[in-house]
Image 1 (cartoon, rainbow, N blue to C red):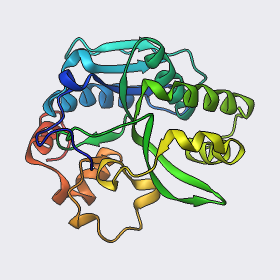
Image 2: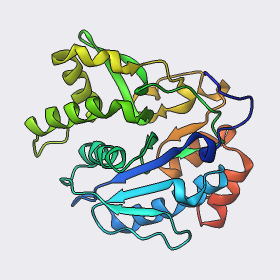
Image 3: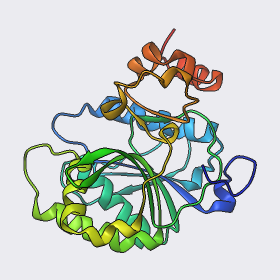
Image 4: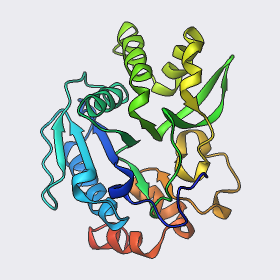
Length: 244
């Protein structure tokens, strides 16, 4: 991991936005989503984020009762995987210079170190044909990535469907048809910053990793990853009624 300093990442100095975008659909449980977003705010502040650097974009008028974070409407179809990129686009067009985008059910465990990001920094899981299969549960990007984001949104819109398609597969298809955008990508983000249950469940070495981010529903996080969870995170979950 490239570090700009020996200490943890300061969102004040780094100018980075902590961004979650969620589009509620007919299958989602609004109460659970609201509870997870509230917990995301508390957990982000525990990890050192200033409330004004936290942005939550939804299509259902989310309001955070615990801290005055930026809660904005996202005009997106009812597909969270697509809405994520609309939220990123809107944040960049609103002046964000650097963004950490992550899912509402992915949890930062420790303060991140400062890291070098140029355009888009993601982690490559594997390959899909000749294209990389990238993890979009947690990644970093800068304002210079706007052309990439706009082109991918246009690609997604052309393939809009009522069937659920993971944006990782859409990204692979996009890069297959538009390999010129590969130059926008650094595919070296370590697993510790984007561990994802979808692509990493088979790994036998997770217990040995010091995970900084863990993507899973909380009951599974508590049951399957107790050794990876810092005390402060466990205490927060217990205070909010998770665990025992």
